[in-house]
Length: 338
Ligand code: IPE
Ligand code: IPE
Ligand code: MG
Ligand code: MG
Ligand code: MG
Image (cartoon, rainbow, N blue to C red; front, side):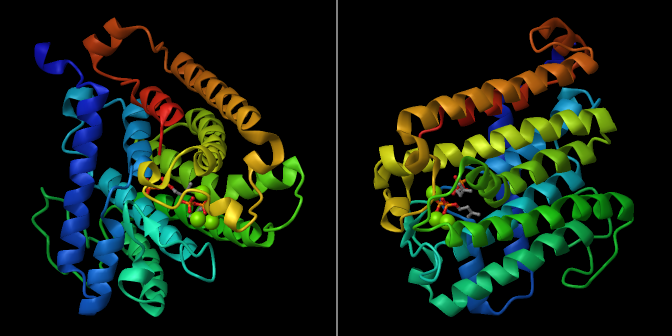
């Protein structure tokens, strides 16, 4: 029984991030890219990112999975692939977002942006490469299972044995990666405009919310969630996804560049349509807070159908399921300062 006690959120977070870092290193050590592109991709994928989306994948998996928490690690290979895939799409979106033709920012994750260190054409191609790699990671054994004896064929398009799960993950991620792009287009078109609340909400739900939805849903897919579980997780993800961008808008105004690791005041510089512009900092904070509260209600409803309340730690300890990690991650996001 002692063996079965779940690790706390801090340890969980650390182990998930460690695994992600290992997989990033493995990927760029093995994938066939031209040297300069490999260097630039690796640069973009490292640095002080918060790893929110991979953590959402793993936490969602841990929340739905009936696997005892004590045996959560090593994480199943498809959880690892989903974590890496969504981070690849996210970083591609950041590299492009920073380009002079978009937000024109020179700092990201506490260091110079990709197009500053390398050049614009390279940064453009980094985004392209990271995007296709995300789908390669999900559909091939380019990231091999450590237990697998068939760690061969790196750089070839090998169909994995678990094709149905990989197909479900692609089906979850691909349309949401596309929605991120749509959101980015509308974000650009929204510069110097007076948008309505519904218009701004739609943009935020796409440009940022979509990948957060994909993360939570991919974790659930890896745990073979029921339709009811997936729906509640989607409701949860949509709220924290919107709240995450509302917070990003707030931080752009209230935090300094050093704290953010990216230029403070970037939105004002471009007269972006943001929640702060529409309702001011205080109201935007209240809105984000409300969204987090509602999102937690979705989680409690999920716990109810799983017959586990977030406070029944005895159940958690005895049976080792329902970690509460998703709830704790939501709390961390609410409290975030960068
Ligand atoms: C920044 O995302 C872009 C948005 C969608 C708001 P993050 O705040 O998750 O960036 P990193 O990954 O920690 O750098
Ligand atoms: C970007 O929103 C969302 C993406 C899809 C990258 P922002 O432009 O506000 O993100 P930051 O503030 O540059 O990280
Ligand atoms: Mg932007
Ligand atoms: Mg930006
Ligand atoms: Mg921003």
